[in-house]
Length: 246
Ligand code: NDP
Image (cartoon, helix red, strand yellow):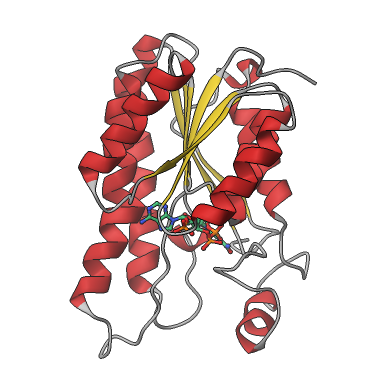
């Protein structure tokens, strides 16, 4: 299945978890891939090698999403190394949970910088280089709609912000033939959200299908949205949450 042959993709936060699965899935469909990471060079190298083994070009770029100039530089490097950009997936994200009393202002600022500001900055930088058929996909969260435990208000706010952003930007990008969408996963087994332990047990009670999702399931939805077939989907907030928000 080479639906994405000759496409060039940048995935932010591709060294681990959902982002790494997206890198591999887009590569398996024939896309050349660049991806960013901030602090896991060895993991990034493994992901790049796995993608190269699928017969595509793969480039790992160190870029802290909290640093807007690093994000712009990552987009420019993608364009230079791959010869352009057709697909941007904003997956890098952080989760800080603390009670209202204990929540630190620096965690508030970092959450907004990585989960929201970097998404805007990468979108602005990438859209300039995209042709008609371009695709922008953000990884939001079901927590934009439902946050059933204390301490997650700032994270939920950051993911709700993406809803307004994609809705609004769909109007800017639509006339150029570029779509922008928000994929909203529920609990997915990653290092950010391990599927075992007390917290997982509490979360699983809210999931209609009574299990965590897999990174591959999320990557499948992203691959569909990145495909030429998905050109009539834009400005959408799409749940993939096992019914968590139902
Ligand atoms: P992980 O913590 O497993 O992986 C996070 C990835 O993002 C890593 O590759 C990490 O790279 C990268 N990253 C983190 N901070 C930065 C930064 N400042 N700059 C660049 N890259 C960064 O998270 P998940 O895979 O679980 O989450 C991916 C996305 O999915 C996030 O946006 C998250 O909010 C969202 N999500 C996750 C859910 C879940 O249940 N797991 C549910 C709903 C949404 P490095 O290690 O190099 O820092």
